[in-house]
Amino acid sequence: CMFSLLALRPLPPGMVVTGGLTLDGRAVGVGSLTLKLEAVLQFDLRTVFVPLQNLGEASEFLGRRGRRDIVVVVYEDIYALIRAVYQD
Image 1 (cartoon, rainbow, N blue to C red):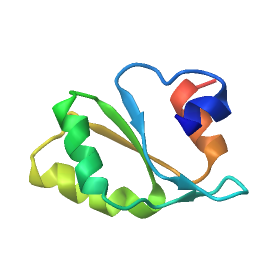
Image 2 (cartoon, helix red, strand yellow):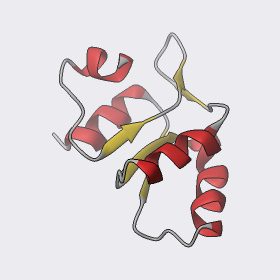
Image 3 (cartoon, one colour):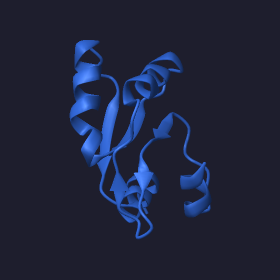
């Protein structure tokens, strides 16, 4: 929700973004990532954007479930996230 507001565009279908942002736009890790990734699997989403701090947890979770069809994209700040999502 906040990401779409900042980007002034809706998120493309099949993608989900999680994480926190500092006031200067840096990404910070998020708690309960496992629950969020369960929802990614439940709703058949294919791309999840996570802060760098959450990469290990995301990779471990998806690896335990043998899910190689989910793409995990890491971002370090809001600017990199916007570029990665919209590839503009």
